[in-house]
Length: 181
Image: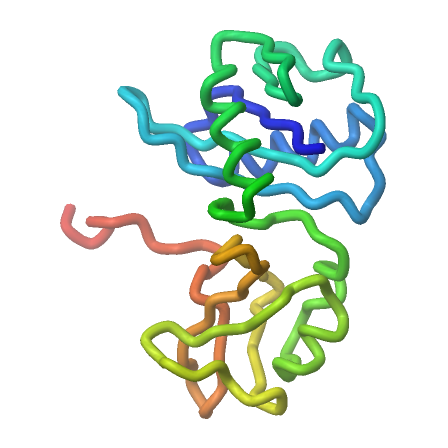
C-alpha cells in the first residue's frame, strides 16, 4: 500500500527531510521506497509517498503532515498526499529518494553494477534513443535519484567529462538566475 504525505514542503530538500522523518517515526524498514512529487496547485509545493506494508498508525506522523492511505485521508493537504500516492502506486510519476540498494550507489560504477546493486530497472541517457551499455561508467556524485517512468524505476543520466555518465539530477544545483544579481 502507498502512503501519501503532504506538509506543504516548498523545496525538494524539505520534502526529502520529511521522508526520512516519517520513515523513522513510523519505524519503517530500510528497504522502504519513498518518493517526492511536485504538486501543481495555486501554491506549488512538493508532496511525498512511501511504500508501506501492514497497518500504519497515522497518529504517529509529525504534526502538520497530511496523509492519504487508501480511502483514509487526514489534514488540509490531503489532496496533495492523494496525488503523490496515486503517482507512486501507478509508477507514473515521482522522484525516488529512498529505495533498496541506494546506499551501494556511491562513487563511480558501471551501469551493470548499478542495476545489480539496487532496484533500479533501467538507466537511460537524456536525448539518446538507446540505453547505455552495461559497462558504461556512471560518476554518481553520491546522489542518485531515479524517477518512475512508464512503470519502471529509471535513472536518467547525461554525458559527463571523460566519456562517463552522471545522474541528470545533481546534488546542489545552482539556482536559476544566481549569476544575474
